[in-house]
Image (tube, rainbow, N blue to C red; front, side, top):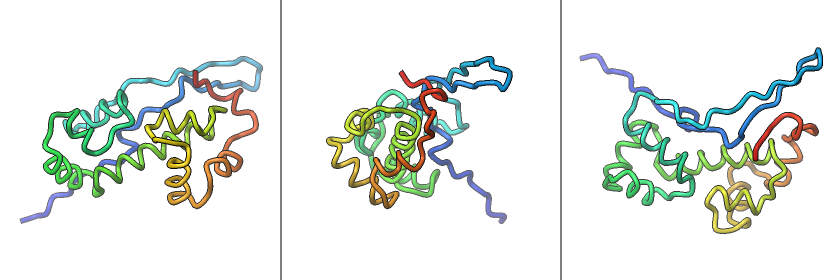
Length: 158
């Protein structure tokens, strides 16, 4: 019997940008604001679609909270999720939050304390601790290294 390949889903498959728009400046001088879609794009997996929609609405959920919000048994959800993604639900949620944090840090001037609140962390310190584990630098250092000087001219976030 031939072994079938299973598509592994990633955070990118369900992620919806925290930004409202990109601002594009043409070399001829005109400016175009390209709105970011705040709609979830279906993945082809019922479970991943539900998870993506829930994360779009309630991004501060724990693995247990996510299971409750989708009406699933936590253990069953964890097993199915691992099979679909190759990672635990907890790892997936951390990657999702890190993607949000990096986007806030590189594209906005929102304070780290406010980013922590928006991403569901209990404090700025807990965000900074986890961020340092994942990126080997502080959120402030990351912002200094990755945010373009003209970020306010490039992105719309409020």
